[in-house]
Image (cartoon, rainbow, N blue to C red; front, side, top):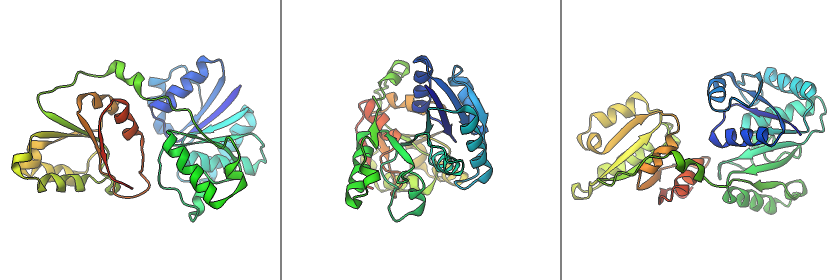
Length: 289
């Protein structure tokens, strides 16, 4: 089978899937953003990169036309997209050249979709998308529930939504030994407001001193403002460790006793980090959004 894969970014699960395709004897052609190329060559050397396509947005006409070109020249049996931008542009590209090739999307977040959002009708609710591979059963059930409420035939056609995720246990082989000297929380997030890092810091400052017997390890890029906020506060300096961006931050979950996901708004929802933490057997503290 020939599989055309389009993505503006990849993670370890996408990479594992592509490696499995190649090992199973399928012919894979990856169309990826140039910024993602170095990581892909390093971690998936056996997956051929068909082309570099820089994507500037959901309606990037140049990227759309390049996608259309690769559909026509590669002539795949199926098209697999791994990000919302790639899915949006691939739908537009297929429509432009009137290609009947099945398009498969991917969905990792539980929230962030709405029938009232026109952009979602260009991707996950579009009749041209044949199937959605879901990161978890929670995502699959949420999509099915939304579809049933609207009673739209093309959304209820089986198997529209599929969960093929098998867990995070392959990560455990390379994990570190847990340090039991102090109770450790882990957080994998960047400094976008929706991630809720400021809220987490506020909560730490509200705790009585007698209850401060833990560390909070935050993995991800932080702004100078947040770095200064931690450095200039004695309590935060003592408790919060900002590790910055590191590759394979998920492996650090084995050094934690619990995971915190202080998400503030719908759109983040049930993300990969929560499932990864659960895969390591960690209790998860998160917001109900």
